[in-house]
Length: 338
Ligand code: ACK
Image (tube, rainbow, N blue to C red; front, side, top):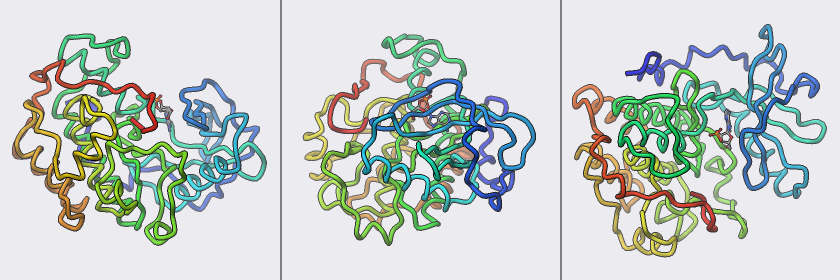
């Protein structure tokens, strides 16, 4: 196990030096933008330095999310919504923390905790080099960190702990996937990207806008068919996230188009067990993919089952035995999020 990689991080919300009583609004001139680290359809993420945030001394590295130069009122509304959701969350070790915002003047900025190792989808894909000794594509370079199969199970435990908290607050994430989990310098997973999150009450009035990209391969059948979202549909996505971890960041439903995926899932078919995945872990995945939403396990149950798997069964993913051409990586050019 890597130093600092600790399953118990997921149980220790008190470890966070956060002061919720401090107002969120930050003087914009305190932000020193350093480097653009990511770009989405309408937003950008920057690494920045900020002086004396939350009453702490000295300069601190943070991540700042903001709108691109040209944005629509709808895009601003979405980023504001993301900020509002983050403001309702208490600090949790497995959720990216809000540190402040600049919302009184334009452009709207969300200032967040910085996760030095980036998104988990890329981390997993880079691990193919370690596990398979095979540079599969130009995307993958020798990774900065070397993970073991046990570390990967611990990541799933971290994410289940964050999701347990989110569901306990009656919030739905609605876009849980490895690309939306960040890894910090201590190899702790942090759920991020609350752009699609909604609370359960609000969900009754919510409609997806027609031009929005959807994470089809992570969506439960009731969400695909009837736009119904609940904690049970987040659990479905968690099952797909488990599959992503086991297959080192492969795109779910390999070789299928989005139409084929929707048809496949709605007919009751499920992704097969990756040959290098333990039966117990696969059973947990398929339980998350139960057709009847209330029959899926809760995040608390998932957390308990993963803890037991880790303590009693040791390795659950024999990633070094993964067939390197069994799973492909879908290029992000379609109307779906991947
Ligand atoms: O792998 P990355 O560097 O990690 O690329 C994506 C990109 O922005 C688009 O989401 C990065 N990112 C987003 N939020 C953060 C954060 N809080 N800390 C570090 N990187 C972040 C993400």
